[in-house]
Image (cartoon, rainbow over all chains, first blue to last red; front, top):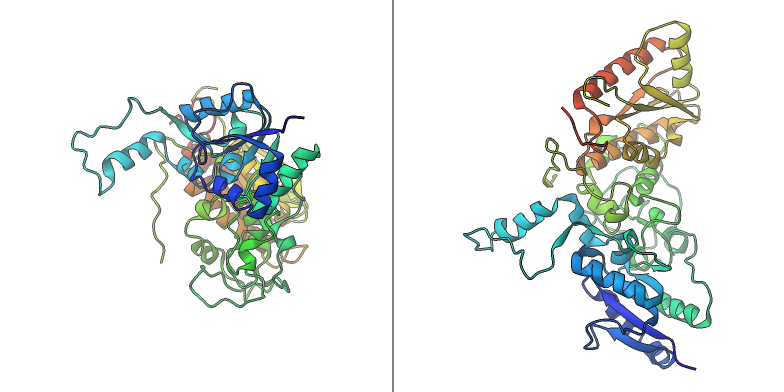
Length: 313
Length: 143
């Protein structure tokens, strides 16, 4: 029996997800015994996935330019099962926040306005390089995705589980739970009197970060990571994306934030004060999922322009 | 629809205990107010999931009005306090993605305030008319 084959395609991404495959450590030896790694750019010198096709294709990274789109479609054609691997391919990831600006704004900022750039003729590259799409897309905007493994990067334990499931022909599912369900920190009474920005005050160990007033995205984030950030006493940033059937992670977080404040109105912080503690709302609540949220991109109109982010004190 | 006869479409979430009764009051008192709102009865203004509001705007509603009980009157004690916090954050969300935060409005209307319901409708419709159609609607903004 021939071994099942695997191809990993890298699109608009930092390549951290590929490194996460190597983080399997000893389990990697078993995985490499069981599967035939046909194509992975960070390890091998191949230009494209094999023409004869592969059993499983992992795609990491969002679709930012036309080359990405072409390579994504090629991988879809050549693989029987396609897995959106990592937050970027599943939801757009951090690069998805670029959708707050138009393509022209980004080009102008990068090639003309940045202080370290010397470009007197104001040339924006357009030859040889693949043309950029208007906005960044998660892969499911273009092709059918069979499995989604989110995370930034996906935890090695889940990668091993996914690979095992695929080898044994089982379905792979993430538990329909939130990060809070897996979080070991002690949750007592939801009665926040003050929201604080991370790093501005002391942190009590063993106590829920949200109850301490820090913006932890646990309640709006899909479980699977075993709450690795809150366990290390760092607020969850939401890299697993929204839970099943939720369209917008920020909506869920805003919903949760409204109800964890103390009931006594005389002790509760004013709504304006809460807003002040979230200086970059889209970048905080939709850090990994803006390209997959309700609006997917900023609403650009000639009259209303997204204001540049102002630092609030 | 042409520029001339464009009428704003407003989605209004009215709390069952106060504002919906307030809207009833406006009706039974025969107070005239613009018919631009599609009123949706909810059990409490705190029942309005932020997702409902975002989806209404995404589906090209020109404005969203949330009407609930006055502070202290909430049938569920703290529902309207929760809404006030959510709406403040949602307005910031809308501002950051480039939609006018004025398209979302929160008003406290009690069951006895039929007059206030009508006045709110009038002023909100006027405000939306000044803002123009939802920029996501076909053809983009026309002003």
